[in-house]
Amino acid sequence: MDLVLFGIQGSGKGTQAKKLAENFGYTIFEMGAELRSMAQSDTETGRCVKACIDAGQLVPPNIIMDVVSHALLKTHEKVLFDGIPRDMHQMREFDSVMTRFQRLFRCVQLTLDDATAFVRIQGRAKEQGRADDMNPDAVQKRIAIFKANTVPVVEEYRKEGKMIDVDASPAIDQVFENLKKVLSAS
Image (cartoon, rainbow, N blue to C red; front, top):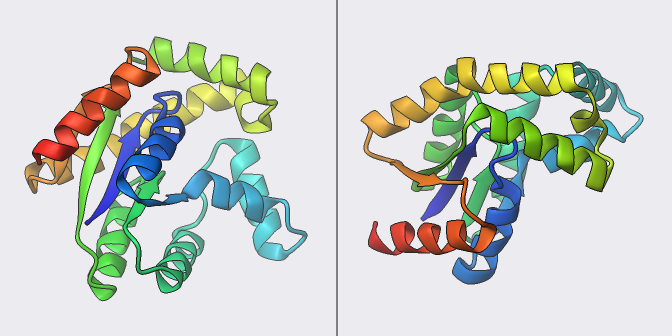
């Protein structure tokens, strides 16, 4: 069964995804990395993606679903999705793609308060030099977009019985131990 990982920026999704992949055999599909890679290409699509990322805006849904479908065509392994779906429209499209590929999934949300998320993102910007994390206004905008657009998706999956919450505020290893417990129990 595939896994969809949710969490506010800075909640440690990428770090925990790597640990989950190593321990549970998932292939990671990290939408942010896929899009950042695409933004480096000198194509019309790449320039569109770069402009959206730089402005802290969401990438158009048709591009997102093409990337997801292409990834699913390439693997028969369990997939861990990080960074998708981000809004209700994308959720409907994502669910449709997953149904078309006959992929079952469950969801985990790494929960973290806004202030801690902002501090972590600023630290990541300094450590990793990620341009999309350098602009505090863009970071605040991404946090606001997550709350306005993605939290309703989380709540919808919760209603469907697919959502598990894990506190992302402890140390990395403790968060992972808690993830292992909830995934083994579900």
